[in-house]
Image (spheres, helix red, strand yellow):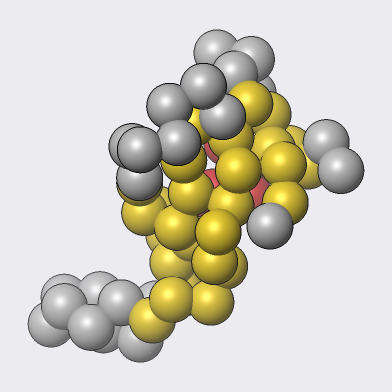
Length: 60
């Protein structure tokens, strides 16, 4: 697990996995990140890895 800061809102997020393969027809094979806001660990999000790298910066 790694810690990231959202460049836009400054909030901290934790990535659980950075190797999830998208299996939807349109985006088949794209690598996704599974992550959650540090203050709400029950809430999970997925985002394409390339987009995640643009919007978040590592703070580990």
